[in-house]
Image (tube, rainbow, N blue to C red; front, top):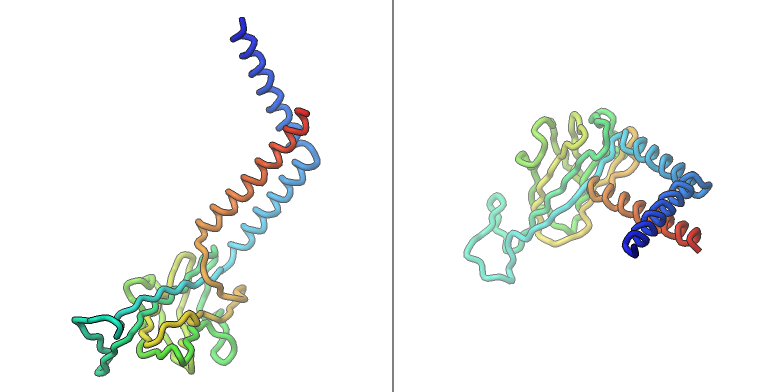
Length: 218
């Protein structure tokens, strides 16, 4: 008898919670949340429907004079006791391709790797193993910059440049602009961004629902 009573109470509580959740989503607060979510989704779809250029930088130390080394590193005919390799990745996280002809011209704001003089750049080249095979690319050296020319940078394509230099630095960046591209920022992966967005909104919605249900129960 007691078990049936408990079961009945649990079913009643479940019905009450479901009813209150329905009331929440049909209330002005719930409608507001749904509207904001729809606007956010619409903005996200608009945002990714164009080229979105991002870059990433990875540096490794090839040789250090602080260590006892059984090897040498030569660049051309010159030997180096301290040398770093920095890989610079440029990629398109948007949904639209970027044509090279739509990039700002040299003398204005071309897409370029900025390499400060104090970095001590000794050599550079396109990494043919990591650069997307379909890209036709070339590097044009300028003062403290390497201009990146390409035919197309389609979604998910990447353009990778190797730079050998003598001094550690966090000041190597990519700058430039193009049609529908006002700025090139350091990357956050699309999957990471979506994950944090979904988790953040999910926790926010759950907290609002719990607050609403608690108020109704009291």
